[in-house]
Length: 333
Image (cartoon, rainbow, N blue to C red; front, side):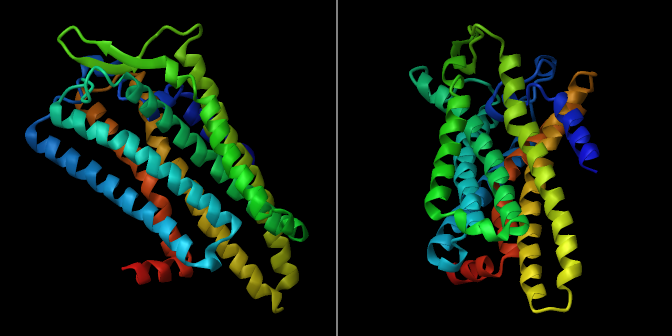
């Protein structure tokens, strides 16, 4: 099972060697040169703006609610929930970095940089923040899996995960994600267009190719985390099955059921993250084989919508699975 899952995701993401370019770029693939995805009718523009604006609003409000609810309810201040909050912060950063810029380009039907030619560092910062936020989310999922692994497989060691250790790990995730994506600050910048204006794009002046850079990041932030998470949850599943047989009919069984409920929630968070990035990998695979402009536009819209939607899934999952989150949400409303 583990081998099949790992093979499936490796094949899917192997075609997406430019996927971090999609995460962090407003530039488009070679197919876009023949098919201008910004060339749309007024009705299509309105539809795109409404969809992406709704996703942006739901992401900002939902992740803000996660932060407020955790601050108000002390019973939720557990290690797993703090890593979910860490993801909420990274989702907040991602949403504010990428969707407003996309809305500006849809409105103007142009890839021109909308903030003026003197904001080159802003261009670099957006590329850097988008890539960093996805890296933080991916490794926060790994930390959640490790926390659940320790709680289930080595419950007597769970006390070693102190609040200080957790804070150090969260800080380390952000520092490492920033360091591994720091090249974006040099790889991107504003370029003068022939028809006037500037565009924020790859500068093509590095000593090694962007292709290699993105391939390394896919291994670090997509394939690597998924393999680790899959292995940990396979071990957790086997352990819980063994415990279920030995604890059935005892008072401890209720505690075990609560533990399984938390695991179901974290599995949904992880599944939502990877399901949302899968269409982008599929689009890159299909793009190599040549498809019609209409089909490409539809696929581009669905892949981008799913990618943006990943930033608003965690609040929904937390409210569905955790009663304390639901109660906190009701109190705020």
